[in-house]
Image (cartoon, rainbow, N blue to C red):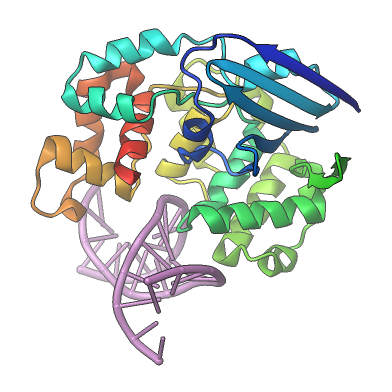
Length: 287
DNA sequence: CCACAGGACGGCT
DNA sequence: AGCCGTCCTGTG
């Protein structure tokens, strides 16, 4: 474990609030000084921006520079993505202006799977609380600058949890789903490393859908927000259906809008960038 | 106290 | 194949 710090000057498309509050992650918290602290793998990261300069500190195992560039998706040119999307229509222009600086994080696949199983029928404060309690109970403790943090448990660590343990941590009916998915990962019924080698998004999606608790929406979130990084998916929750109906479909009852209609509309409008378009629209609509 | 919010899943047609 | 009630907990 070592302490590191880096400064990256003049970074474009990088807004911490928009990155951390757009619903893709659950382990980052804002501090009084406006910086954010989160746990990434076996590292605690503290990050802040002053104008366009990014200041990052870490305490952990990994090389900070490498970790930062990968986790925050720095190799991707968000400026050109935004330029393409902006040209589509005034709705995209407006939502990009609102959520400018969103980046889609490369989050650990295992952690993302469990986190989004927990997200089903759930709200963000409660999801964050559950994940924090799971980490505290089954992850590793890290002490840094007078604060205590916990890593997200590995599959082996979470394998120690009984269904009852999970229920007591507040997972509700999701307890069995997390338990069984953990079993399937430990049994290698699904090989998470192999998923990264698969080219076809549809095949990876079908693999994820075999996991208990992973339905269409959760699978798409995993594909978009984890290291799988597929931008050609379009997670449809109540907010996305709402915003797509309001802007493009105009059905008098948004609840009656078929998901297939939403999906084909998204593909027509945004093509292979529909995943990132979804994030701008979702974040804008939620305010 | 009740109503509601939020996806997966299984049982039903 | 599509529809709908149920699963659990926090909030208004």
